[in-house]
Length: 409
Image (cartoon, rainbow, N blue to C red):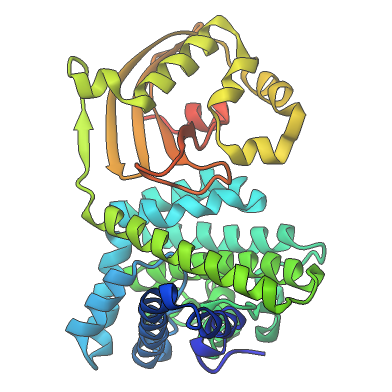
């Protein structure tokens, strides 16, 4: 069952109850009032987005920048065509796309498909929209097929099967609403341009003229909405297994909610104000950057074939997945790709809690390859956290085959 409003989400209603409880504490009143206002503004933002863009089957997902959505709604007013153009520009912004892609690695079934996602991104940037659409459609189908024990791809699921519990994509004009065009069949060949993500017609070859930025960007929009659906499925399962909340537990949860909201607001401001910077060899900023130092240690251990030590530098997601076997897993992954030499060329600190290190690698008997190592400053739960919050720089996409297949040479 879809939600008529963002205010109907279980977490929104629970937070309202928690804030009512906290308002009884004098020291919390001003803070709870501010949080309540933020909640109402967010709910209104979601409704305004869907009022303007749901007829074009755009979906509000968690990876969209709230600042960008606010700007679009303020400047486009009731002009859906202009709003669509501005939204597409948001996806075409390289830094924004990088930020949106970060969370995909937290889903194992999606993490295995990230090399394909990166190829789709390359096609999208180069204007090869037809290729981008096909790759993302295959990624979505394969991801949904693998994600749940019921082995059926996205194309084989009805609209009611993609309801997202406690998520803005579960809005009645969200994913389930847009999924109807995804499933819409086309038997006769159609040469006229289309601007919707008609999966069946595109894949089966009856729709021929879909090579445009609108359809390609809707494929990205759908990919992020589908990953939100997957996160929502996890959250729903945890909710069903959890014991009922007591008032004492609700009060504790309310305090956690307020603390999280305040922290997240500060992090969002840091991210929005961040200025990308590049550090090159010879500068103190380059020499002292923790991601460069981490890359130096990782590549040195790789050359020395000290593969087990590399586990100290990779994302917490890998540790959570493999547990005590993580060192063995890494050893088996790296020993097939011995490295003989390396040179670190640059650090591109493009986000407050993420950066890319460029290095040139030399493998025995092969040509030098220039590769990129993506580092995330994350907490113990693998969530990106910039300074001054506790966190460590860790290698995000750590599999050696990913590094060696994404080269600039």
